[in-house]
Length: 498
Image (tube, rainbow, N blue to C red; front, side, top):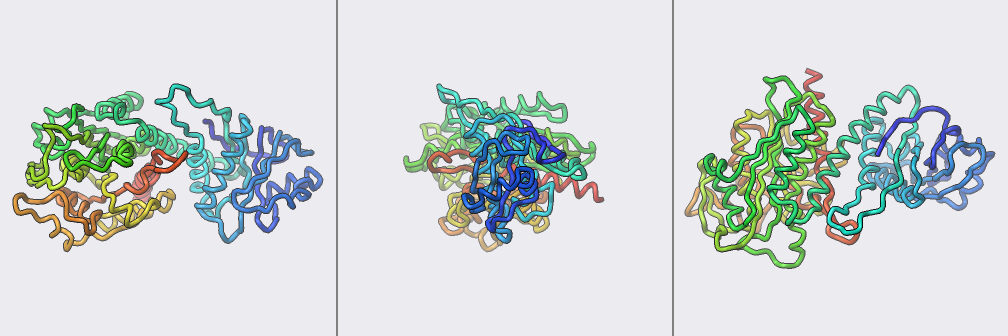
């Protein structure tokens, strides 16, 4: 899809469909008002058929006095209710309507009124990301491929003064949108295709496409030598080999400490010996969405071209029951030297992440953020709207919360107090891998925190936001690629200010 900035007279724009706005009080947005005047009041005459509710659409053909073939009159809602949520609703409605009429080009001329946001860069970036998301179609494992989308270009009408900023906005938005698509596609692939080896091959291919990126794959023998017995314990019951995937993006100065992203890549999670119930177990192919988010963010990073050093680490395994599988009560030694009593083999994400977090020390990181579909308890706490954020570093936590707000990919901070650590006490090892049913999201983060003492660290639990479970919307969402990308963009901005 080509996104572009369009300037000039709205009446003379040659496009298959021009999108203009009307408020719920019947007031035409500036571009719509110009169309109305050029058409001798044509739009005003139709307002009795259009209430201007947010996302309400009326398609008009052969509007007199203008060059566009069609006009889509789009409801903007009430001025005091315009928000990110309403903006998303409007963009979804725009895309749904233009896909139905199979046009090749559209120009969105909503005059920035789709939300109350005064930040043109942010608003246009969101429009680009959300429009792109509506064009995503999964057909990788279908015998009949999806019909090709006829839409080839999406333009945004801006003044000449704002055109340069607009180009920058849609460039960043397109890069992030591509990362989101990658994360969604990886998440949606079934576990018999998207294995740890498949993820490794994807990372190697990405490195071939970007000279600033190098990928290293550690196999089981190499992880064994490093003492990653916790990570390796998860894949013992599977025929699929576990992998540690390390992607290094070197866009900054050689002596610049990198920001590290760590993703949980359990490509299928049966729960192991602590077997999950059968209902909805198919959705455990999504248990690698943390890894998918990191992979998507790294792909977006290569296109954003940030002057930053970033390392993406993916700890990938398949959790299966078998005669070789790890058993409840087994004790393993982590790469850090700490021992773990595995009381529940379904609490496996933290077992792969802890060794990856120890491995991250070698990069002397500026920050480390891990991303994981870690706990069902996070869904109980926050539902399906916010990512759970836990951190031992207040400044890093604030940075991530701000990034989530800016990216409309929100997170909410949960406590990480020492009092919770006691729930992880073990009679037989340094630490147990579960802390009981109470505060499950917090105790999972407490476990991880014991492996992050040497750097600034935060944990993102995306169990509630990584995929949708119902109906036609079922599938991976691509969250939290936007949050991660904004977090990295903000680091570059901070360096520039210094």
